[in-house]
Image 1 (cartoon, rainbow, N blue to C red):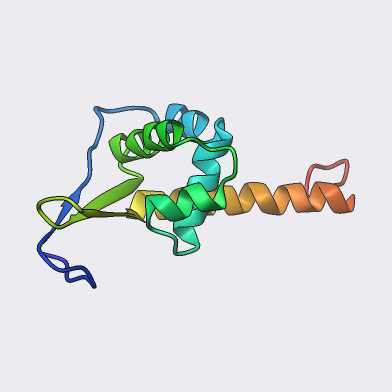
Image 2 (cartoon, rainbow, N blue to C red; image 1 turned 180 degrees about the vertical axis):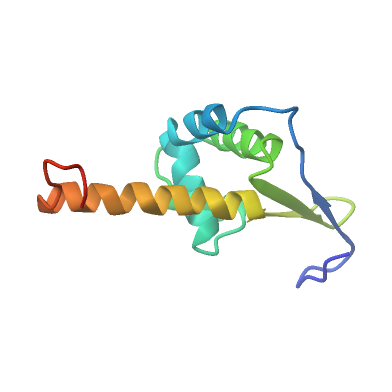
Length: 126
């Protein structure tokens, strides 16, 4: 079991959905601004839902929980619960698949920056 700054035992949860194409998964995640933002916050070291809400003005707890559950089902995030009775603490962390998603997001960002600089050529390369 994972050790934490929180007292009590920790249980880690990942939910993997049945075989889904990677293209469908990418479309589902990248097509949602909140999912992309939540992934970026995870990559930046944020792991608590309250921190996500503070960092995302306009994001409701309901939508945040829907997006986090979807990423859990896809196996992009893992959820760790500390404590057995309220108040419990929950943290989300990227899985190895989630780290690959961050790579996709970083590449999209790199391409956007090249387009913004006017560095894209007719041949399609930055």
